[in-house]
Length: 452
Image 1 (cartoon, helix red, strand yellow):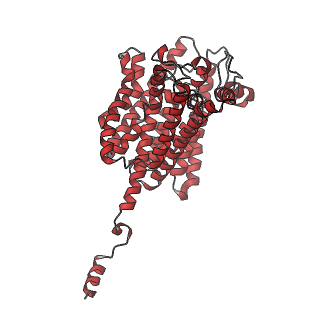
Image 2 (image 1 turned 90 degrees about the vertical axis):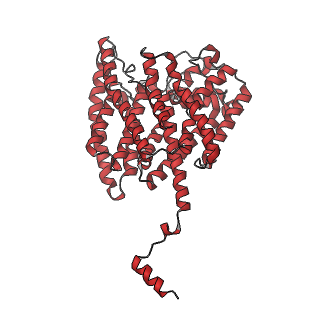
Image 3 (image 1 turned 180 degrees about the vertical axis):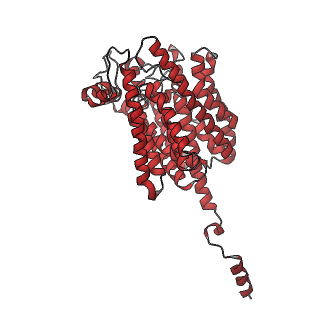
């Protein structure tokens, strides 16, 4: 399974990029789905023998409830087979890799190899994004949107690198990475998120990094680590602000600075709220994407709870036959954020269950980070920050459409969740001698002589 996992990491972070630039056949973009089918077959065989003992009942309950909500939405709306297949592709394709660590235990050496591969991919984003920024300026353009690295969307690349920063911080806290190496990686990861002008970095990076550093720091040194974290963020701001301002002004017919954007309340409101309604043709903002579907379903409790059906509110890259019936009505909202897509297609119940899954992953991450000193414990510490970032970003970007985020998030979440159960089983099965202080050899001999 190690080869399968490494192939997945490469496929979901580089596959579509190579197909888009013409360096690989178009079919390569479907490789992650093919790997999911192989993983699913292995999970069913191995899991049936192991009785899925490393999958906590709370996850069966959460996924079961989510499956029931999806089924109700399908029965109520009866989307076409093509629409259902297209929708299920995005909702379910990454799920086998959540269960894979529960039936296949990876060694520390194997996990190190996976993290090294991800480190290499994260570092590749720097030269690729610099080249893309150069191409944008060479053609007299100004937007940072084409600066995507190998991850197709600029904001997705930023979230990926913020997650990499959280993991690097956790490894540093656990003594698996030197402070100098962490600082170097922090700067290397920060540059692509700066030159692509992703405004969300200003919120998401402090959220993930501060969470990881504050929870992972020793109790007696948290103040020191807090000051260090703030100094690190100040260093990032010193890099981010002037670079962002330069690119946002160069060749831009409407130049602005990041300071002027965030200090202008009207600009921020206009960025998230375009004031659209269901019949408007203007581009929707993030706030519109949430509010308009809720307002539309307010008088229809059934659709409010269960949505219009999986895939029934979205377009599909597979063709018109897979596009949802409600795409013309809600498509420009579902493409904005995952939260909006969930409200439209699986209802507020579905969104609530997804948020519950985030909460369960957060709990397990904290438990494993607290009690486990292996490499999984270090990953779990970083995963606290990553999960918070992903939960907030659910309301910012349509995360479930992007393999690079969805596959990796569910795989490492499954790794942490399985380790949480494993630690619980080890504690319950520990022998008495593991919890009862042993006598010294001399005391043992004295006790033996005292026996009749």
